[in-house]
Image (cartoon, rainbow, N blue to C red; front, top):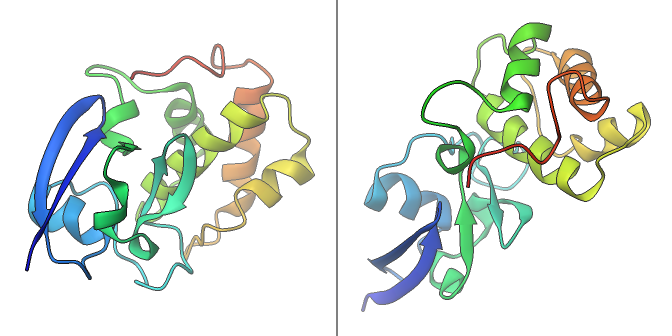
Amino acid sequence: MKVKVCFNLNGVPTEILVNPEMTLLEALRDIIGLTSPKCGCNHGDCGSCTVMLDGKAVKSCTVLAATVSGKCVVTLDGITPATGLTPIQQAFLEEGAPQCGYCTPGMVMAATAFLEKNPNPTMAEIKEGLSGNLCRCGGYDKYAKAVKDVADGKYGPVSERSE
């Protein structure tokens, strides 16, 4: 028996029917057709499926889709401007952080949520804030440096992102 789920997705009221055991990641990819949240492990270990749920970074493979009714879900698609990049995306690019790019959407979402909570972090806080996201290519230092550059204002205000 399917469950009706009504939520806000990237600023748009959304209604879908899901099986009760379906994860938010599966619903976003398989029902809605978004590809930015990646399925890396399906166990909440890698962070490639990170989205924001009511402003908090969560691993969408660990959230049941049926539990997001009435909530706000934001994916990479919802924060990326129609033209150009967010300050975090620009910093990642300039720093050369993405290598294979598989972890990048999750890293962008984790960094965005982190900087919204802590706009003036230390490097140690940044590393801790990104620690739930695995980069198979080992680009952690470049990702962390890019987040620090954004926090330091090199790419504009931290809050400058598309809704």
